[in-house]
Image (cartoon, rainbow, N blue to C red; front, side, top):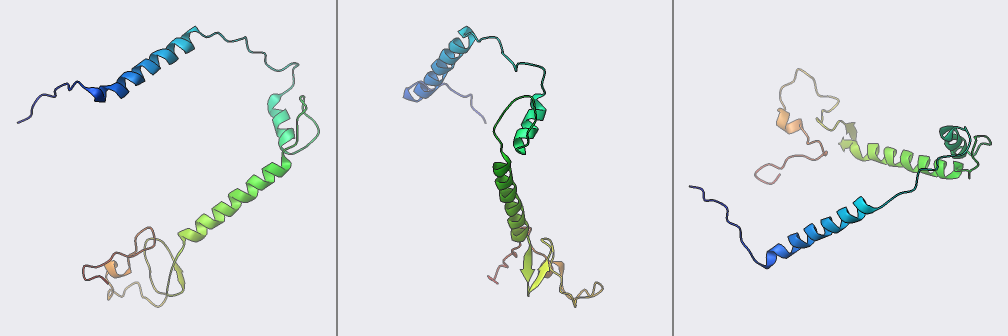
Length: 136
């Protein structure tokens, strides 16, 4: 049998009341604030082209800016290193042979040979093996 929920009054309602009061203050501030009209960019140049020129430190574009080629290359190298490290960590090995994350099969194992069960050769997706009940 279920019972109806009951409203408990007490000091544990204080954080909720503070959150409601903070919401009212933020709503009043945002609804009564005024913003200037957007200025935009002067002239008829392409902002996107200027960003592209600045990214590769090329002269051109309608708007002058600083070059970001060194920052672009550093980020490129960091992302490539992270990708290579992720691939290396995802590979698993057993007996010196690189195997997939789903199943280990030795090179001398025949596909028709059913001597090993799937549980003996199966591996978890993280590369580990399931522990049997006797601790092996």
